[in-house]
Length: 90
Image 1 (tube, one colour):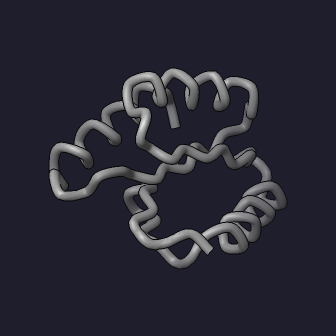
Image 2 (tube, helix red, strand yellow):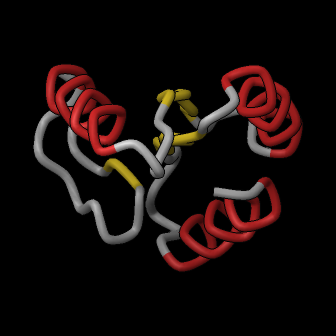
Image 3 (tube, one colour):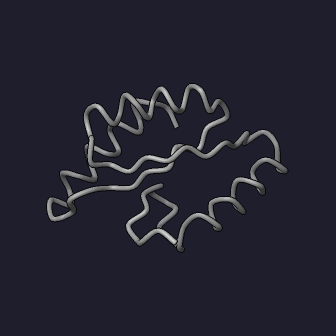
């Protein structure tokens, strides 16, 4: 997910759900370095957000399966369509 998409997603969800005090977001990216820089930029604007980085190369089925397994180990079931985690962490 590109930085601007993540930024707009956070902005939209926080405005839509005014009662939500924070949001959790996972940046699933091929380049962990770029994702970490995007995470740092997003946290400057949304300091209460919890943003994780998950390495995945969508051109590799093996990488996608490994990322899915890691995601399932880290978090309880969530709404994957939006990419936001509204439920508690494991």
